[in-house]
Image 1: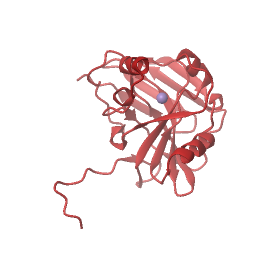
Image 2: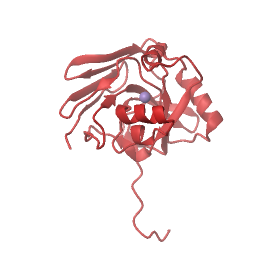
Image 3: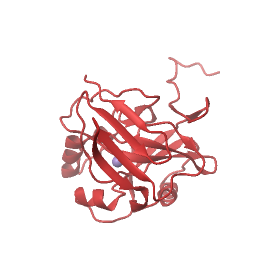
Image 4: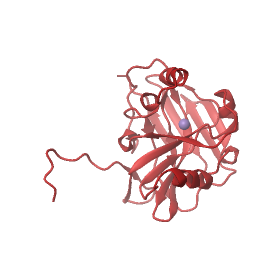
Length: 216
Ligand code: MN
């Protein structure tokens, strides 16, 4: 038993559909611009996958509502397929939302500075329950609606790099371990989400993700 100078933070985790067990999260890697149409809308060409990260405690789970972050006037939604890594590769799948301070990201890009404040802020990673086993197929639809209006819609088969390819690239860069999550990128249609708005995100075959953006 270590003699901590204060109690260690709890381990972030995801619920598992149909189980009382939970998936302990070690860290979160995210892929940028992994759908061709979204890459185009962000002004990028097809290229090797690139990664950024969010801290594990940025997760918002179990139907909780995130709070609108400080220091932004342009918070964006990005619905994404989330892959959960176990001892032998991807063991589970979930619907996630990569919340982004788009104004800070644009400023960081322009200045050639890191994206941490744009991507890795508190409560920036709402995520639904994990479904264990085989993942949704390439024909599965991925969607996001705000207050009932469809904003994003795509097919998982539109990914530039498949989940397995993304994982292989991540393994080339990091010692990916059980408990790691990978957010695999978003289809086109990203845009603002405002305080009070209801976000509903779906991927065929997975537990939907829903949250209301709480005002500060
Ligand atoms: Mn994203």
